[in-house]
Length: 295
Image 1 (cartoon, rainbow, N blue to C red):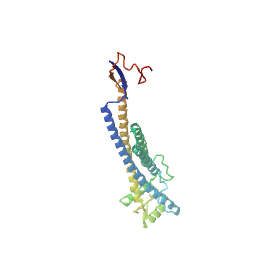
Image 2 (spheres, rainbow, N blue to C red):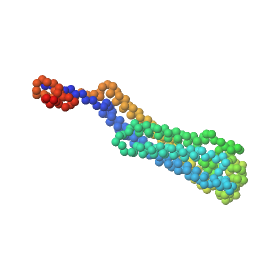
Image 3 (cartoon, rainbow, N blue to C red):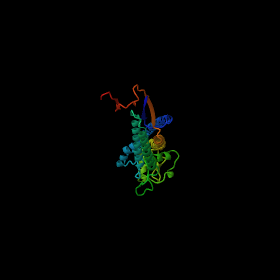
Image 4 (tube, helix red, strand yellow):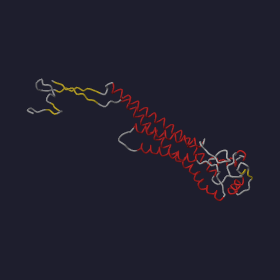
């Protein structure tokens, strides 16, 4: 009667309960990140479209100044518009890449890589949205021509006409932006075909807004609001990605603890009955192959 003791080692892992919880949480977090990324793309694209409408209208009508039809002021600052377009494009592209990578079928879950990708995407999107909002609100480094106290944007300029039309007064719109009073009179005449009295502020009191100015005011306001929503979504995306990274590291620490305590090993004793003599089983075994007599 003899016995062989065989030691079988397996890869250390956390307990089955912890592993099950980890997989469940990872699946939930992955679906949440995917939904947030799709929602972000679906909002970023209309943001770009709204701002592009006003910018396209400006590009079409800016050349009217060559024939003395001045629709836009000399102190117009287009940087906020460019910032919204650029930041919206960056956010849409990054989240679209994440959606594609997350949906690519793979035999491996790539949990850690997806967590890091989501975290980097949310951080870059947050910075892009924040920069866009700063340029729209504060316009850092803005330079206005001589004779002007401030600058105008596509949103501020197109919305000023609506303020005058709906109960505003010319005095409420300070800081002239047209070249002269006569210039503003020609703008009003070309836009509404009516005779109006011009004020020293450069906008004709009682005049109606030029064509598409009300639409440009609405779409630029909508783009600004959606950019703020994108900022909030990127914050939520970052929080969810951070939770995913934390959960993954927690499970890794559990596995390391089990590896250190030696729980990754188990011993199985197998007893083999040998019918001859008191020889120890396995004495004639080399490399796992039993020797035949005479070899």
